[in-house]
Length: 125
Picture (tube, rainbow, N blue to C red):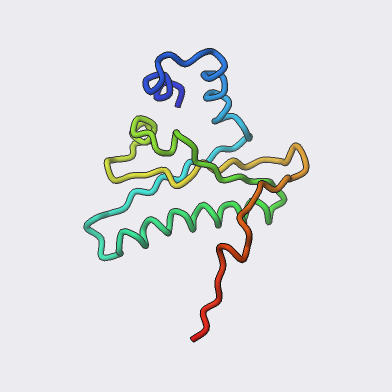
């Protein structure tokens, strides 16, 4: 990740580089979920992509069920072609997420979310 960042931002300072290094070390376990759809498959591309997201969610649910804490992030490395290539992802590959798993070091805090009524509607047929 650091090499890709330096290539993308050659003028990056020491603090930026340290933050990039810290990205991969935020938890004892980092699982990178790489979606590699098979365009020749009879399974629609969208369903293949959704299955990568489902794998991320299932892994997090399992980690929490076992008493661990987990977090699913993306950020710029998920969209960087050099990072994807370093993980042996081809041209059609995409990083579905970086999953951090470990023991919580503090209480969870919720980030701001959109107003429920603004994003959820009920269909009345």
